[in-house]
Length: 219
Length: 103
Image (cartoon, rainbow over all chains, first blue to last red; front, top):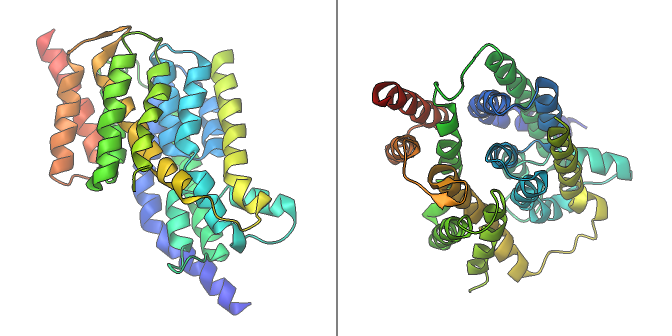
C-alpha cells in the first residue's frame, strides 16, 4: 500500500511544526502540575491517558484553587467534550476490530484531526494516526521533562509560575475569540464564573460557566 | 495524593471514552446541528472562565492583586502576536519581578 505509506509520511511531516510548538506547552504543564503537588508519575500517566493540554491544565489549576476532585474532573471533561463531535466526524475513516478503533481513536487531537481532514467532509486515517502518534509521544515526553525539571525548583510562586496558568489559558483562548459568537461565549463565561465564585466553592464556577455556550444555539 | 490519582483516573477514563466514541460506536451518523453549535462554544466559555477565576478570585471574593500584572503582560504579548511559550514566560517573569520589587 504505497499510497497509505506516503499518507503516513505526510501526516508525520505536517505534525512536526505542531510537535515543536507543543513541546513548550508540555514542559509548562509538567512544571506547573509539579508545582501544584502532583507527583511525577501522576503527571506522566495523566499526559498518557488524557492527552489534552487545556483539559490537563484546567484540572490541575482547579485543583490548585482548592476545589474538590469532582469539580476538577467535570471542568476538565467538559473541555475534552469537543472531541465528541470531532471523533464522530472522523469515525467513517476508522475501520477494523473494536480494540483497534478504540486505540487509534485516542490519537485524535485538535492538530491531528485538522491534518487528517481532507476538507470535503472525509478523513485520512493514516494521516491522523501518524500525526497523532508523533504528537502523543512528544506530549508525554515533554511533560515528563517539565515535571522532572520542576523537581529541581523550590518555590514556584517566587518564579511567578502561578501567573503562567491564566496566561496560558488566555493564549489558548486567543484564536477562538476572532469569531464574534465565540467572543460572546467567552465574555459571558467569564462573567458567570466571577459572579458564581462569590457563592459557590472553587472549581464549581467553571462548571457553571458552561451555561454560556447557549450563545451557540442562535442561528 | 489520593485526590490526584482519583483525578488522573477519572479524567483519563472519561477522555478515552470521549475520543473512542466516534470510531467505536460509529454509525457514521452526524450529531444534530444545534448540539454542534453548543459544543463549539464550550471551549471559549470554559477557557474565559478559567482566566477570570485564576486572576480575580480568592476564596469566595473578588480581588485585584499582583496576578493582574501577569495577565496584562500576557494580553499585550498576545496582541503583538507573541508565540504561546513566550507569552507564558513573560507573564511568569514579570509577576516574579513585581513580587520581588513590591515586597
